[in-house]
Amino acid sequence: MRVLCVCLGNICRSPTAEAVLRSMGGDRIDVDSAGTAGWHRGKPPYDPAIAAAKTRGYDLSGLRARQITAEDFDAFDLIIGMDAQNVADIELLRPDGSDTPVKLFLGYAPEVGRTEIPDPYYTGDFDEALDLIEAAARGLLNAIRD
Ligand code: 4NP
Figure (cartoon, rainbow, N blue to C red):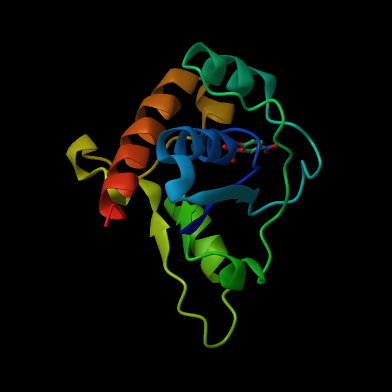
């Protein structure tokens, strides 16, 4: 299963989601991440995101930002957005005829009782983002177990 994690900048939430899914999912999934914006293309994740992830054993340091493209709808089986704006922006790129699902990541963690992962670039709360990303990753991996 090929999964693309998408946020706005591809330097906080989606690279964290990429590393968490890769760590928890092993060889069950191929995972990548991208941003709806291209501002940070070629850059590593934001230092505070790297530091917060490291405290939980996830290494973000080798990841580099890129912008999502229409070709990603063919290259991946599932595209997940971190918030509703991400999903709306991703949908604007959908090629005619593509039926690749685009889902909210927290849709896989209904027990959390929220739908969006707040952007830690603005909130400063990288632990909150990690908690939500880990919950969503567990749910997603359960959902694709068979
Ligand atoms: P992300 O956070 O979407 O979780 O990577 C952001 C990072 C950078 C910016 C916005 C959001 N920015 O405006 O540069």
